[in-house]
Length: 187
Image (cartoon, rainbow, N blue to C red; front, side, top):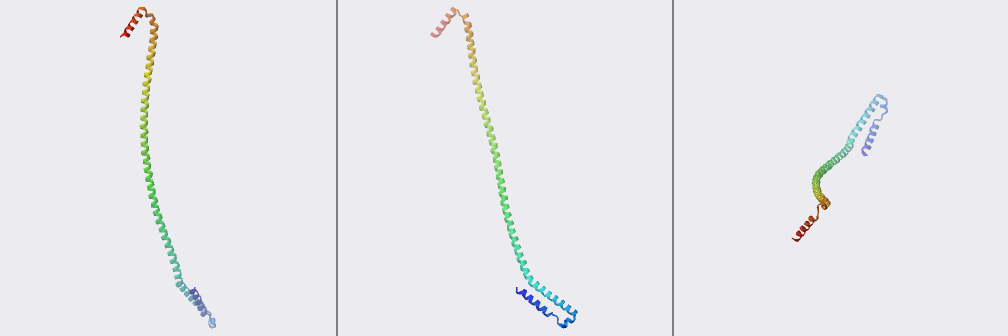
């Protein structure tokens, strides 16, 4: 550092010039004033040099720091902008997903309603088929029961006739029946 070595050299030169001569040593009050004067001058010179030279160094350091801070701010602003863009994209994706979910829900409700209606119609057809089968079976069962009743009535009637016929059938009625049967066959 040539500036600092120059300042140190100059300080030594000022100190040598302020060395007390023997005559100056005799006047003690004057000596103190000269020392204070030379020290104040030295301090003023050093402060001036520090101010002039330090201002440049400090100014450069502050400028670098300021540039660093500004760069960090620019980067932070850029990251913020990117985050805002990503947030907007994600919000758009979320909105699309919500719309898709709503569409799927509505479609599911429509499908459920259609399936419910289809099941109701199918159940109604099944009830009608079962009713028709029941009516058919009932009709068939009624017919079978009627035929069975007719057979029983015929059997009972035949049984009764067989029981009473021998009492009412004599030879003459028997011949008459035979002749009628022959006539019927002959025709």
